[in-house]
Image 1: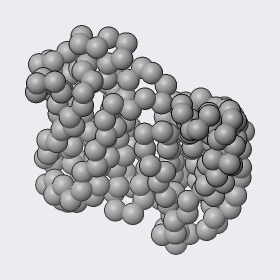
Image 2 (image 1 turned 60 degrees about the horizontal axis):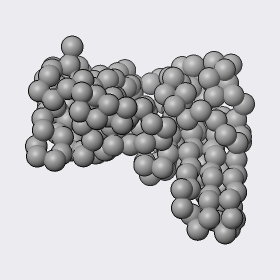
Image 3 (image 1 turned 135 degrees about the vertical axis):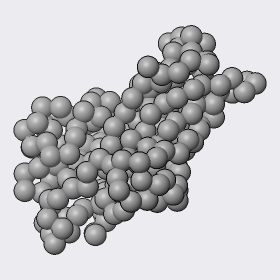
Length: 235
């Protein structure tokens, strides 16, 4: 499997840094959260309807890669922000998506080789939110990682906690070598200073996103909402 990092991200960050003595921007503004709606097997037209035309288009390993990016740099870097999205297409269908904003490191976009065709792994792993505990100044968000396949899952799962404020991340964690047996689940948790809706209102943690590496093709799997209060189970 061949990996690439969208060069546009590096170029735009460098441009913004050079202009950091004032207020400047590079790329084109777009609605970052809309990228959550992009799913595997979508067509060019469906992706363009969600994100608009790409800032840059390239071809890698026989796949077409669309990229969106926007960097804003204020005086001395104070209040600067950045966001990037790359979508890979093969045979006119989405085969992978990666996203990055201020709180998540820019990841490599993995392109399935032609020998693997456009076949994609089935969604065999699901992440759901369970109990939230107050642990004295912080809040512990429990998640169940369930393996629906017929073999042990030893891949990687990244979970990110989100709130209602644009590009604001309340916590994130990457879990490796989970060793989840077939048909069972493993409980993990993320600690954050921000509580659920009944505690912190508009600035509370309201949802989560997760990525699952199923052994060679990292894709954005899904997202969900968290419980409204401490000590409540998600329904």
